Image: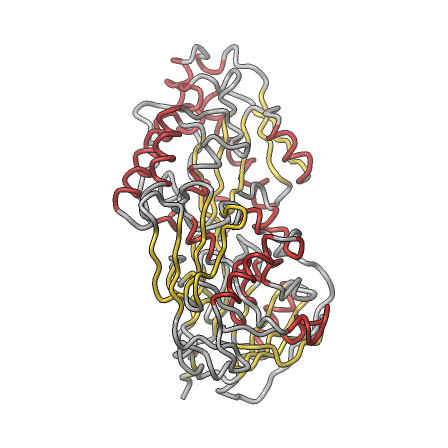
Length: 505
């Protein structure tokens, strides 16, 4: 899991100079795609891809056993179907019979097994396999025959399919490293819809369609990805008509008055984390008082966030209503033996140094002073100090921006308020932990698993170790006329490439 802005923001914002934005003749067979705030694509090695730009581009080039659709659901990709053992630890994938790389060579099950083993080995040590593939047992990836891949897990992990849908599990053409050595990613190809034609580092990446793509020949013949070293340069390029798509904008970035601008809740949440291990927030009524007095956080977010839809991020599709007060904030504080704030200790709100979050902190502390008579200091911290303070629980209340690693409720419930080192609140419990453990043993998309998550979230909501404030927005721009492209909650652009086309008359 990623707290603060580490994978969710820092990897998106790569500040540098800008490339010129110029108009161009229309070519309906070419998709011109601008990457804002990007000096260069960090990597095209899927085993190392962890930032949103690399993830998005790798998803155009490579495929895996499964992939994420526009709704962030795990769907078939290189595998047409799979079975899961009754104990939930053995996944058996059956490959498509027509699966071919961009060079026309057939994809073998042994290729996929070798690629997963590479991601788990020294070549992938600097990548995110420790997050997404950590549940795989030692020597747990095999190819029993040419069309079957078997993966054995160390324990039941129903979220495994969504973890397996990330590029770290994707498959490059096996002969590329032997042909090109360390420069093989400049010729990157797999069994995805496109392959690299040329890469001018720091300027552009040209992709051409894979005529062997199992999903059908893409209508787009080529994609030209143009890099713009600042967000402003990318926006100017889009406004001028130089690019058809603009992505890579940092979370909570607004795009006002831009034709084709799209925004949606990210797989993320801004929330208050209460330190339940010490006074005053060890008392539930104090947590209730601060939550009841929080007010509307969107008043200062300037269109960069959506209202918190419930206790869980809306991307999970499991509705657990937000806690709502049954009495005034001042009454809750009085019940905690701090009437009108008398005797309330000195406390501070810690948060990352982010302009939007700092504005939100001022809004919250003003509300707490007005409604509760309590003065709360504001302590913006750099990422390292912020993480240290939270991990050591040397704080009273914190403003946390959480960004998900994979689209499964376990990623939030099992980390932020579960038996995990990422739980900075100190609240959890045996019943709560048992509900999460039971959910891990059930079929990934089953109603029973969703019901267990709903029960666990409701239990946590009752104890209020955290209080959701908003869901940061992800934004992109897709020029009207281009059909089949969608913005996802991960900030990536998704498309069914046999249907994506320019329909402009």
